[in-house]
Length: 103
Image 1: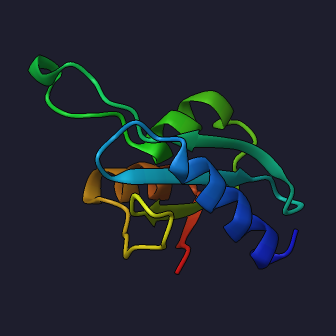
Image 2 (image 1 turned 180 degrees about the horizontal axis):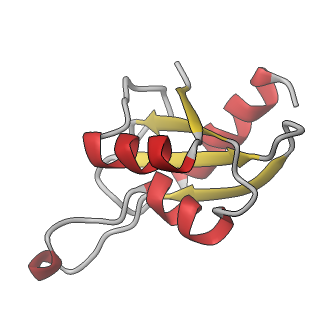
């Protein structure tokens, strides 16, 4: 799949997030096919924050994930800078999943 198609999917999906920071993760298999998408999700405040899009994606598609593209948009749908947090980076590294940011 072309990077422009992945970018389009990622932006569309990120806009669907209900969080203040609208983030999506797009998962690809070893052939480069999109196998799943996820957005960050809010959790109850007493649980200490939300569920990151990367982790939501890994929970659903761990067996087949080879790479993840991460995207963040503002309320107008414009791309914003993003990088995976240290915890998400560690999980992806331990599972052998490569990750990329969409800019």
